[in-house]
Length: 434
Ligand SMILES: Nc1ccn([C@@H]2O[C@H](COP(=O)(O)OP(=O)(O)OP(=O)(O)O)[C@@H](O)[C@H]2O)c(=O)n1
Ligand SMILES: [Mg+2]
Image 1 (cartoon, rainbow, N blue to C red):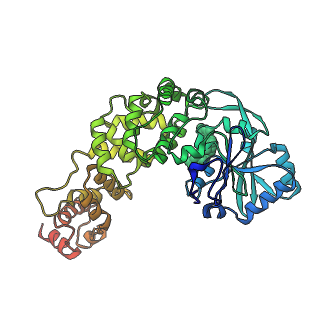
Image 2: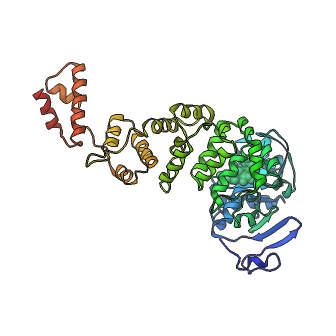
Image 3: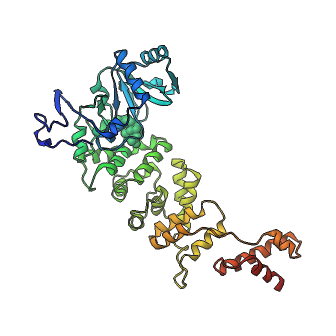
């Protein structure tokens, strides 16, 4: 990304590589010309911008993608905003022979156009006239500032023109550079428009702040006062946000905040969480990319807490099983201290479990327990195949199914005891002896 050499001289002068200037009150603009920005200009995007220019409608990149580009990151998804209404867009795309897909967003002003095998989500500038904390009734506008006003955070409220001009009405760029997460206007109002924004605040705090701890008092007050509004937000939306927060930075600080501000009970987390265990585990997993559930499990005292989380957030079966597994085994499935093979109990567990994700679960448990050396060994270990089959036992002269089952189990135990070293013949020779 391009960095201005003389930011303290803004808005009067600049280094010449970037050109910040104040166009009108409240609007700070500058030009961005970074490699990440240039890389967005695919054939599809070029076709799209030409269409809008031809029809005299304004089109800009909006929200999260602008924030990412200004942070020097190539955005994963790019949203576009326009002064054209949905029906103007439809007319324009139809006459240009551009395919439109997925018309579900139209009520809220979003049209998805497909050009050169790429989808472009374009939303008409809007004002949220009526909000109930979850949904909004919208009115279309051609005023860019009005659209910026209804967005959550200043860092998410900017637009970017295709010549690199930044349109920033609420000091989003300044906040991004100063690593400040602030709501646009009043935190309370923004939160009451969509309570999920409480979790978005936490998530972006983890994303951009260097050192945790500093928050605007007004923001914390607004969160505490409105936390119960999260009770009306769907579990699926909460889980998506919470997971993103859990894989970001400052998770320990943010989870403590979630408890201090009494947000926890409204998002399915136990009121009597074990924060001491959580502190220990957050230190253990640091730098080891734990799955979101691995860290959450430390808040749970009993397996029923996982079930309650599932009822509230509708987590996946895999996530639920991981939570249940960690809570059940964290105290008992531990390294063998009295043997030269400390990993053995974990390996035996994987061998006995025979489920495809058993190794993953055990690796997550090792992160949880802070057993980093064993984690590395486990990741390098490939599960040895048990060398004897029912067919082998039948060939040895045993025909009763029940007996075959019992023998297989017995041989499996011997094989495990040998450190998975015994081969087929050696194991079968044991049958002959018994
Ligand atoms: N509750 C919300 C969700 C979204 N937005 C606005 O819509 C934009 C796009 O939303 P979304 O794609 O959900 O989030 P991003 O900010 O783009 O973050 P991500 O990188 O995770 O996509 C946001 O930047 C923000 O301007 C908002 O104001 N309030
Ligand atoms: Mg986005």
